[in-house]
Structures are given as structure tokens and as C-alpha cells.
Figure 1 (cartoon, helix red, strand yellow):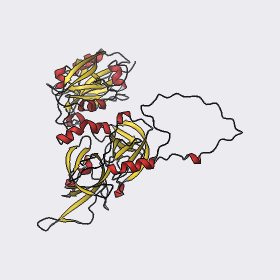
Figure 2: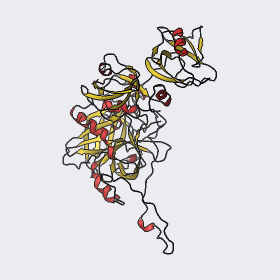
Figure 3: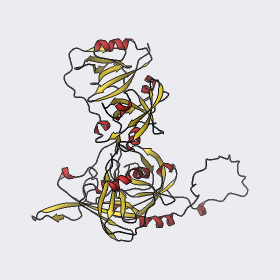
Figure 4: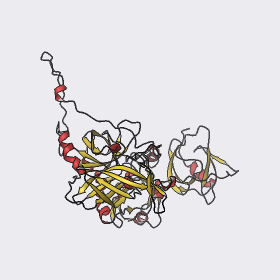
Length: 494
């Protein structure tokens, strides 16, 4: 269950958006260092036991043993702004998908015909990146807003216009009208951020402006089901509704993340967008108002252990190409279904979802170097990217309709499935035999290939199955609805 951490104060039930069991509501934990004065002194009579010396690799800029949190807070707070947005309410269908904390504050306003036009206000946070008044925040903070006002730490207020937005990364760029000479938050490098490093979150939780919380980086590269490019920094710095869009500072006072989400019920798990993701798209947001991304033109899936065994790979890493768009960038470059992409532009693809992020960082028309494994051999190709228009086909899976099952059903004993002829070619999976351990195929799937051999009908499937060795893993190419993917099916040893 995912919720955004912008805040809309109103006595009303919360509207929830379910996705991957996460919620952007809940409380964080604040980490406190024990003051040196409270540490117990060692007894002079007690001999200290020998301690093994551990040599750690040197850091580029090591974090000091102690640092002045109060001084850091005082320095960065002027760079952070509180955001209030106004939304016209048209009815239940007009509410935006991130509307978890509702609120008109006191009635509404009247339209020209004298009828009351209800409004809502929402609270969020942002930070200044340019002295002329450019501010970064989350896209869901200003989504469908009819008005945006920004308040600085010195209590000055400005009307803001939305310069650019990127819903896929949940980022937005604002410009404060009439502002100049503002303090700027320096942007750090989230790639260099280390797990365990102290971070400071500054925001507007529940309307309590410029609240500071301290924590550490709990993990990096977290996928929480919030969007196609999930790559969050996990932190235990307290983040609450209203913190959306606020900065996550490192101990140097550099912004390393943009606070976006918290996990309800976890008491202290928060998530921030890495600042490197913002730096990738910031020039386009400022110049165009939107983000153009490159498209490789293929569907892919994770490489499971069974798939790695069937493909004779060293381990479950990379992205398995399931389908290639005819005439697309991948097809023109010679990428084929069954290839496993393991590297893009020198960046390893250890998990399948990393492929989407690494390709999208490149502009349409640019060329990328793709390293793939085909038939146990590694090769590198160059692909010229198309412009990404819509990712819905790559992100979703359409379940096939469950029509009437054909009367004639046969069994494929080695695979442990019930099968029948499929209209248009291939073999349909109608059910599973008792005791079957098949995990990666479902009723309704249409088997198209077995270990690279095309399957046109039941006879073809039986012929392909007869060649399978007991105890091996069969690689099946199946169609599920409108999508094509691969599945690994273990063959029982007899």
C-alpha cells in the first residue's frame, strides 16, 4: 500500500493506493548519537582485552566521528521551502491518485454563477536549486494543482509556476515569481552515498514547517512498486505526510535524495529519490518542461535460478529478452528473444529492472553499447534508441480471457500439465497434473517453443518433450495474453 507524503489536512478517511504492500504514511525513527559525557569510564584495575585491528578501505571524504548537527541544520534550513497547493474538487473521479490526506480548510470558494466550488489544499516541501527561484519538489505534490504558493524560512511567500514535471520519476520543477538572490542547496552525488552514513531530512510534516530529523542511510537501490524507475534510498530519518519533495542532506550539507515515501507500520522506514536521478533530467525539465527518454523496444523479464539453469548461465543475473518490437531499436541492432542483457554502457545489469532505468537515462537517437549472452557466448552490439512514447506494454501484463475449455484435453506427462490445441498455433495449458511442481507457467498460457524448437500443435509439443532429459530444466517460450515470455520447467528425474 503506497501513499505519498504530501499532506492534505481534513477530517476525512484516507484514500489508499495499493502497490507492493507499501504505504507512504507512518512514522520514522530518529537516530541519536550517545554524548561522550554519558559513556562509562574504564576501570583502572581492569585490563583491556586484546582487540583485533580491522583495516577499512579509505573513503573519498570520510565522515567525521562527530559533527555539529545543529550547525548543519541552521545552514541548510534557508534552502528548504514549504509548499501549499490548491486543488479544485470536481467529484470522486477528479481526485488525483496521490490524494491520501484530503483537506479543504473551511468550505470552498464560489464560482461566477454563485455556486460553491469546493477546493482542497495540500502541503509539501521543496528545495531551492537556483538563486533566481527555481525549486524542486515531487510531482505528486503539485499534481493537478490550480495554484501553488511557496513560503521560505524567512517567512516570505511567493506564487509559483510549474516549469516542468516528470511523473515517471515523481519530480517537478517550480519557479518562484519575482524571486532573486535566494540561498541554493548544493547537489551531491547519491552514487557515492554509503549505507550507514548520516543524513538529515528537512520538511513540512503535518504543516509543521522546517522540521529537521536525523537518521542514517539504511539501504540503497530499493524497488517499492511506485513507478517504472524505482531506485530509492532507504533511510530511518523520520519522514511524515508533508515531507514530500523535501531534501535529504548528507553531513556536508549536500542534497543526496528527495524524500518521497514512507512505509506504514514499519516505524521508521522512509524512501528518497536519488539526487543523481534528478540531475539526469533537470536540464530537460528546465528547457522543455518534460523529459524525453530513449526506447530500446523490447519486453524483458527477470532471470530466475531455474531460467539461469535452462539457459546454462553462471547465475541469475541480467534481463532475459522475451519479445522484440518489429523494426524497433533492439530489432535493428540484432537483439533476439532469448538473449540475456548483462551490461549497458559499461554498467552491469544484475537485476532486470536496472535495464529499464539505464536505457531511459539516454536520449532518443543516442547510441548505447549493449552486452548480451546468446547461446552461452557473450557479445556486444550497438543500438540506436528510438523515442519512448508509452511504457504501459512493458510494465504491465494482460491476463488472457478464460473462455470455454476445449473438450479434447491431452496430458504432457514430463511437464506435468494438461494441454490442448490453441487457435492460431501453439499448445494451450489447461491445467496441471497431480503433484506437478511447475511454477512459472499458468493456465491459459500458450506454449510456442521448447528449448528453442517451435511448437505448432500438440504433436509438436510431444515430439519436443520426448527429447528432454530427466532431471534437466526445459526452457519454454509462452504467450500470456498479448505478452510473450520465457518460463523454466524442471523435468522430474525418474
